[in-house]
Amino acid sequence: MKRVTNLFYAIALLSTVAINVNCKGKTENKKNVEMPEETIETVTITQSDYGETQDGEKVTMFSLKNEGGIEVDIITYGGRITSLRTPDKDGNMENVVLGFDDLAQYEKDNPFFGALIGRYGNRIAKGKFSIGEEDYTLAQNNGENSLHGGIKGFDKQVWDAKTEEGNDSVSLILTYLSKDMEEGFPGNLSTTVTYTLHNNNSLDVLYEATTDKATVVNLTQHAYFNLSGDFSNTILDHVVEIDADAYLPVDSGLIPTGELRPVEGTPFDFREPKTVGQDISEENEQLKLGGGYDHCWVLNDQQAGFRKVASAYHPATGRFLEVSTDEPGIQFYTGNFLDGTLPAPNNGIYGKRSGLCLETQHYPDSPNQEEFPSVVLNPGEKYVTKTTFKLTTK
Image 1 (tube, rainbow, N blue to C red):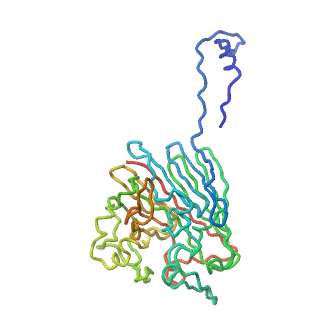
Image 2: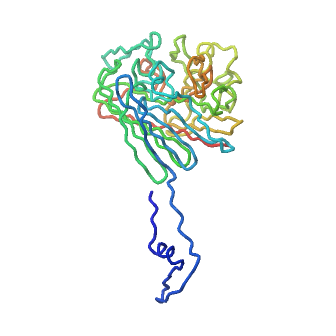
Image 3: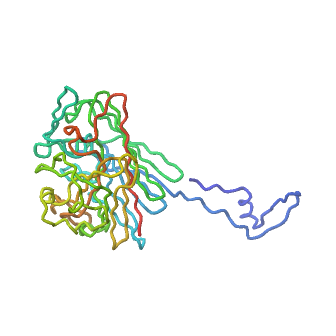
């Protein structure tokens, strides 16, 4: 916003005398006139070049910043959150999401750092499903299964972008047209994802999609959080809460068995806050299958729509992350497959459990499990879901 200088104050600067007119038309001299305060933008969005893909597509970075000091960097390649800087309880600013320093590293095989995931977040068994009488075979990129949309999912596409600015928020609007049979999915899917940063320190992720042919859709955001701001630390000391009475046990391929298993009396009970490390090493078949937590929790109060469902807290820094959504499930993943081979900032590496994910979504393999909430989107319908990440300190 531009500073507007009042004519009378301009005169005051020249003459050191302000002339005030009272209601009777008289004038009086008055010295030491206070100048109006400069209006400062409290929420901004800027853009910069982020290089080109190997195919020559230009990639742009958008930087969103609010008056609370939160800064979010998002690139059009995969709609990825590459950095999220937020203050700790002492005001120290640090990045709390895992990412890379350059585009080339994102183009290599990586664990979906900060990416938008589609068309289908999580796994579809054997890369196959049916809609009505039609059978579909997907790209298999996780053993015999399809994971996170396939070999070239939404995380590897360059999205179109535009911005919007409000009084207390800024938005980055990303769009992508996934063509019929891309990665094996039917229908031309028009997708819009809107990131909105508010001055109350919340980051909304609004997903919208339409199709011209019956298809399946399950979009999510794959940010890895480490609230310590130091990626040489693990997330085992993070205190996590998940509002769920049940979770989905999996088979050896991490495909849900179809059972909704109560969390009570198991390491999967996060209904009361506890550290990630408290039970992660227990002798438990499901923990062994996932190498830790890599499961979908069946969220409570699904009929309530948008509500708080989970949180993570780092006591040493005071950073507190609250997650709200209208989705029925959340995949809690503790970075079990990070193995120290990927580069982190400042010549570091991302070791095992250096980040955690709270991925709001429908259940894995829903297209093949009729008892699960439907993920089918038909022509004339609109897919709409919203998740909010709010970052504060306590």
